[in-house]
Amino acid sequence: MQEWLDERLSISALSDIARKKEVPVHRYSIWYYFGGMTLFLFVVQVVTGILLLLYYRPSAENAFESVQFIITEVQFGWLIRSIHSWSANLMIATLFIHLFSVFFLRAYRRPREMTWVSGVVLLFIVICFGFSGYLLPWNKLAFFATKVGTEIAGVIPIVGRPVLRFLRGGDDVTGATLTRFFGFHVAVLPATATVFLAVHVLLVQLHGMSVPPSLKAENVRKMKFIPNFLLRDLIGWILAIGVLAALAALFPWELGEKADAFAPAPAGIKPEWYFLFMFQTLKYLPAKILGMDGEVLGIMAFNVVALLLFIVPFVDRGQENRRRTLIFNIIGVLALLYILVMTIIGYVT
Amino acid sequence: MNNTLRDRTTRSVEPSGLESRRRFLDYLLGTSAVATLGAIVYPIIRFMSPPKIIESTENSVVAAKVNEVPVNSGKIFKFGSKPGIVVRTDSGELKAFSAVCTHLDCIVQYQPETKQIWCACHNGQYNLNGKNVGGPPPRPLEEFKVNTRGDEIVVTKA
Image (cartoon, rainbow over the protein chains, first blue to last red):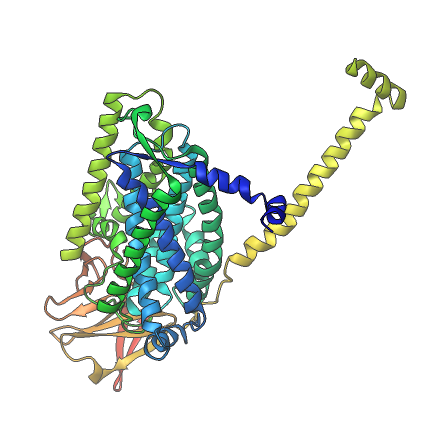
């Protein structure tokens, strides 16, 4: 039987590769786990997302009521919905940790530039997942978050207006927007994410785990991926399931009030935590900076930073250079501090 | 050796016409491929861009009953597909504006404590003439004309 399968599917070749795979062991090894953890939480999203699809109805008239039905009537509906929301947030958290750890450990350097680029694409896909999924319960907070978010796209010069109309399915946030976001969330983004995820994971397999340049690669001890590293990964995943279940049970995700296109924005409205630093920045920007609308300038600045993220490995290349390493570390620390401080201010004010 | 063979073959088939015929076929094939792709992509792009919905042309609307807007309060009303806000100031004067914040499209509200129109999204503030006086909004709110007709407040686009 095994021979029959092997002849057709080359299983032994694949298992040989898996058996040969090794993971370096050093004082930064802990950071290797966050990629796998993000992937695991993504799988949780796919499974719980498919389950929610059994009951969710994507229209302005039915969306809120269908989520209400899920969390009040469907058996374990509250659990599945809460896990979907919590896991989404944890996934973004682990993704940020993964991003910053790869940045500080210089794991994007030659020949791993494309692994970094595919990872940055995945980061933006995940943010789009978060943004599109947030609207689906069709509650007040989501309605205004989407109004602001799409308007932000709309202020970009030249392309902004057509992009805004494309995203909203018209000039305003309406049921048409909800239907579109649903389509993005359950079809377009999963398909795109699968492609980039496959490329990203394949590249990681091709190049192996990166050893930070500060350590001498030849002196680093190695452990087998199967079973040593995989079992450690598993422990992490089991812990993650525990944390998710606890969060979902102790802090069930709220549904809020149904969206109303003719009600004022509720006081204390805030976006999801991963948008807070941008939200807080937009609050601080004055109406006019150098004759330009403050928010246009702020939004353009965020776009430029997003683009800079892509070119990191192409700027930091060549021989290891102390001065450049220091500059990159300072930029990384400042970015991290900015995000942390603005998020905390946004949270407490 | 190979080159000589090809030269000989080429010459024997069509001494000068083959190259230009091949180029012509390539061109034909290339343009058809582009045209086919265009014929597929164009309708897709047009399909994705939502059709323009003709905005309601109503120029005036009953915003509320007079007794629904007491002194130092505001009320959101529907002006076609957009929200408007009608405010009665301390002196009893009625004012009406577009309720769409000029910053990032949120819906504003009247704050009796500060006697200002306020946007909760990014803390934008407007005075009772609709002028942006604090926070990030870059422009004033569009102002409407207000009249009372019996017990109804009628708002008209200026």
